[in-house]
Length: 315
Image (cartoon, rainbow, N blue to C red; front, side, top):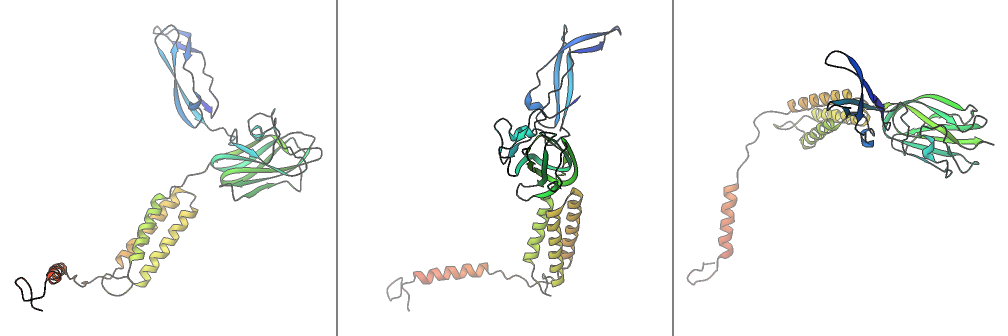
């Protein structure tokens, strides 16, 4: 069976079972307690039970899914609130509670942190009173700093008790509602709901590593026409490929884009390696032995005492 995050499933206490003689009867099952931590995130878990009057065990497989309302019970804050009508009451799943500002004369905001990035498809708001008139706008953000407007009802105030807005925005972590009630209404609402699915998480680690390796090659390359050097065109082509790969890191929406970018960059690196000018490179001269001899001779010179006495040296 399945349940939503934060909602404990109700397991039946009676089950119909088939006995060894093929007869059927209902038996009582006592289930282990379900702990809060088992239902506070998406996933699966098992609940064990005991069939009454036997030593037989029952097993229930539970799947925890996110509620379709992705804003439900997520952390909420507001520019102001009444002590009995707090920001948290604006998305607690209850239309009997509400968020309300403590200042009816100026526009006020309410904000929810979704806890992760979502691709959002719309929202629903249940207002405090059907008799009031409300101006509002909805903005979204991925970081809580830069905001993009998705709904604007400032010039077309609403009087409905429930408004549903269809809009689309990707990689949304924060949603902010700014509202202003027209007398006698105060800014506030009974419930805010948002709908969508978690954004695709794009892993660019491998691409970034490939970029770093390619950049190292480009930085060390010596331009010229001698063996071991590279044509200027080869270096520029590699730098162009690196810049294109970095653009994918910054803008990729899917893992397939990243995989394709890695393949393109690898091809560019191979072309760069193939462009290296070949031929017999100047042989390296090993001066190690000579330097050791010089050092030894220098020690002798430094220790020599000039004079005509035994153990000394003529000038």
